[in-house]
Amino acid sequence: MICRLCGGSDLFFFFAGGGNQEFKYYRCQDCKLVNYDLSTGHDQSKYSATYISPRDNTAKPNKDQTDSYRYLSKFARQPGRMLDIGCYNAKILYLAKQDGWDVQGLDLSPELAAQVKRDVDIDITVQDFLEYEPTEKFDVVILRHVLEHLIDPLQTMSKIKLLLNDGGLCLIEIPNIDGHSKKVRRALTRMGIRKRKPTPPGEKPGHVNEYCRYSFNCLAKKTGFEVVDWRTYSSDPLTNFLYNHLKIGNKARALVRSV
Image 1 (cartoon, rainbow, N blue to C red):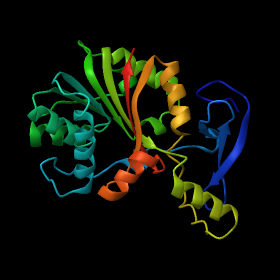
Image 2: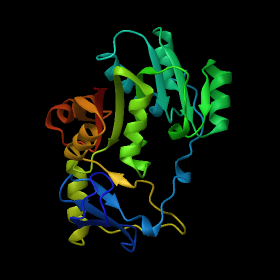
Image 3: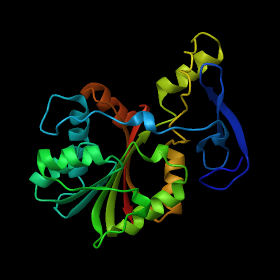
């Protein structure tokens, strides 16, 4: 296997997923990216979601997106043009539009796009973002929990760079493979203390690349970005404070700038 980030061949077996350990993941010694063995198949269809109005401030997905927007607003203070890739119900765009941003969303679901347009009058383009060719560039691009599903990280980030103005910002949220509780679960599973759940018939993994801080920094550097901020986070305020400083949470939030 060749690492999909750095092209290295020095990979070692890292862990196995699935009830019968049928899904194998290998870590690159050089860039630390965890590569899923694609030969056993992958599936993104299970991530389709039921529509929730961005007006509903009590729904957890909306609370999560509100947290993301508040974080972004600390760095991107002047309204400009914003693109959210895989925007779901466009909650972030809904908040940004109220603050004066010119907003655009991208999603693969025509049903979600139509619902967002009817609900909050925000335009969502139904298209694979790797094929998206806007007439103008953006000041901010958002990619929340999408990067880990995309096979070619270099192509992904290079495309984002093309979408951004010089000095533009990209907010990325991804799982952190080196999160403390993930390490504990893997260790307990290896020792046989934590039992594996049977894999539902036909189910395949959706995550094809798993990142840590080091591998993400490598990706940013290789594709022309500087890392402005990288932290782990939680929806619980106290835990979030600890994770922001200790960097041990299972979810990571990064802000990068095109250079």
